[in-house]
Length: 205
Image (cartoon, rainbow, N blue to C red):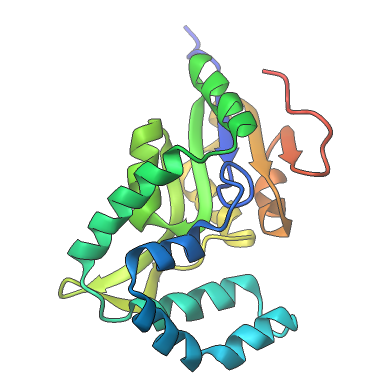
């Protein structure tokens, strides 16, 4: 007998399933204002360069993470991540959340694929009962080193991480949802891609 046909649904997070910037939001949720101010001043040239398009978004995210989280203890930050995930779960894009739940109701495998951090995305995905591929900070001796254990999960890296974990030949239909150029490679894997503000209607399931 043949195995039942499966479908795979890939969702970007920031700007797609969540309409805001969860990464910056988490910095202000988990860290005190004085720490943010002192360490933010150290990377002002980087911030200016980013807005002048001298640095890419992935490079800026890694620099910002290093500035804010280097040598921060994992356990208290992880606790903030749990709390932040609860908040995020109440602020998701209702249209895309309804689409995600429809995928689940049909038995489709749903994966969140994001450049944001597993610190809060992992507990969020547990709440939503979906899988996760995302950026993962490096930890040594119970503290964040300021580096990524797995590189920033955007653009081509999104595609390669998906292909590392999923054999797309196992799926008869692949859906992908994104909102920016960083999602183009992920959307190229799908027969049913959806780019916010460009695609007129959501894929029919």
